[in-house]
Length: 112
Image (cartoon, rainbow, N blue to C red; front, side, top):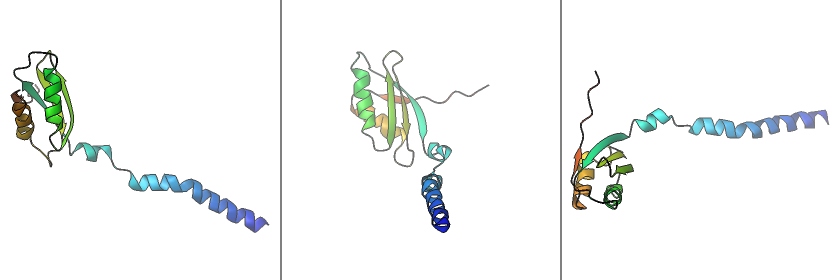
């Protein structure tokens, strides 16, 4: 009887530890995932109404490799996060231009 409880205790400990062990084995570091992402700001021309940013966003989101697009009518801009192994700034800009809104990648400002 004592042996059965000891065996049951070991089995229960293994069952309870299994999810923790499995999660640790499959854990991917967020910094590794972020290394495959690139963020670019685009100046968007010809945006004249509240529907324009929606059209630009939808056009850019259709590009394979684009992870997110945030457009802003007031600043006439778009911030795009994408996977550089799947697409380029030029391809994203071309998608916006094909929708009627030329997009110009903004160069990052040098920090002083």
